[in-house]
Length: 558
Image (tube, rainbow, N blue to C red; front, side):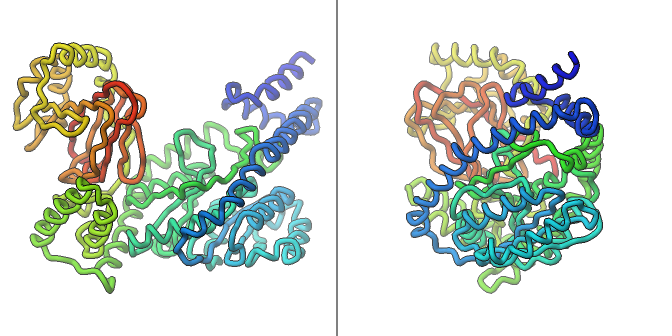
């Protein structure tokens, strides 16, 4: 009896995120397998509490948001210039007829133009709820007539990934959207937002090889969930998702390809609720137990993901080859021979940076897009004068993958102390030039340390032990000091053969940096690492000074 009470209490505590971990999910799995045993009632009790939580979340959070976005939609729609595109929602489902019914209802209630949407669902032929699924789709024309097409595909149990691929083979949409029966579309007009985003990106990338995603609010710090891929993306690879994994890492594969290619984009302002059991947003059922993986299996999938980097690189090469073919074969595009292209890039880069400095952002963007159409760059936000087309473009890198971030972080406090002391003693000179609100202090240039670096012995000693930062022609280390208010115009680095490392020494509230399309902030005592050819724009709209240590390292794929 004591163990039973302990299990019940443990699961009820899971309503608080602090108490959710892998052991909790193992307990649920064990109880589901013993559903007919003496502890089976525990799952029913917890599920009742989860249903109450779910209804409250819908009434207090989701439905008010849907109504707000619907009221605001006419104002947003007035600014939309994109034509509507056919969209395909691909949804494997099992033994969750009610969930699927709720999902279909959410699609119909939130799409501004549901008639161009098709929802394709795959159900196993051994599913105990198959008759109920058939009945649901028999009446779909009556209940969900606004949706262009609802189609049920029944087949052998082939797994979720293979089911997504099966549905993709039968889809007609310009974009294929990964869907689940535990999703709810919440924001009204999400389809129009996708149209506009796709239209903007297609003007930037005429090949239309794109991967997008909505905000499903499952992962911290804007993590990606449920990929949306364009028809050219799917046609190039010949599949929607890989089938080599047991379950997890499937979406990670797609997003990894997109990130390596530099074609991973969010659709801003659109929220999709993911009623995931691990977040206590849905009851625990046999389908979760059927698909749930042990930690050992998830580790095996992750290990397989790491071993398949070569295959992922090959897939990115396929996508990249298509972008090159489209760019060279496009009616408006031309491909300049080298070295004429190098000369053109330098001139374009100087012109675009000058327009940004003059506050003419729209003209700068038009100029950058013209250069892309001429085949000089593959992205208007990635404009290095020295352009290595073969290098993959990633918008950001994990600092944990670079050994030198650890000694920097370990010495963060010591570096900050000596920087503050040197500033207070006015012993640092902005040899690198001054801009409005920003001082750039050169510490290393042309193979030697500057006079300012002699005042920062700890910093110099650490960097001396990082050969990647110093031992190449043109190596430089700078200390960027920001004083509010400050906003530096957008610009790109000189070469994509290098990564930019920015170590946050003193990070003031209200300061930040946009890298490509992503607004970021420096982790205090940590690094941001990104392709140096990407456009970046810095600002400081808060109070107090800020300081960032910045240098370059060679691109790891060069």
